[in-house]
Length: 223
Image (cartoon, rainbow, N blue to C red; front, side):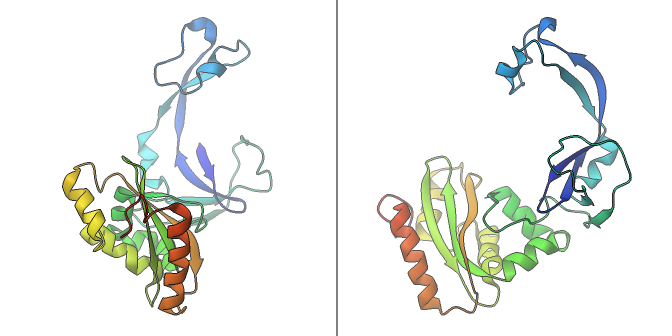
């Protein structure tokens, strides 16, 4: 049973796998898809051959358990764990953890708004604050810095990108027109959270600071 770490001692469900065998370096070269080529060359290492059990895929990213105090242990014996949450069907993103700890692809952003009922934690946290955000055009590395304020905060601003792809930004619209790789290659993240009640002028001042720091006007996508 595979889980990934969340904040505190929470853990999110990833999947259940059956062990189909064990391989060692002496059995031959590393599989083409293996990312641990250097580790594979160490004779003291061995690798499990795992088959995913698709019967439990519906709970992926939906089930959250209490992992316990042994958070530094990468394995634990199978014991009953407290279930903290089972999110609604349609869940595509892991539980919201921290404003500065995530990067969303455009596909994930679309999933977020297409399944709002299943992402109530994301909606609540993004709607609670304004802030300065970053869009990375991954294919070219160009950056766009924007900001959000008002009643809907970051949630309301990012909804516009999910709906229109460019959020009303001229350079982003031009980029999408010129390059069919966009907006799929856009990556969304938060640079700084701000009270959504902060005056718009102050929010724009913070945005301007990040534009200057990151050069998003000089060589990026900001006008």
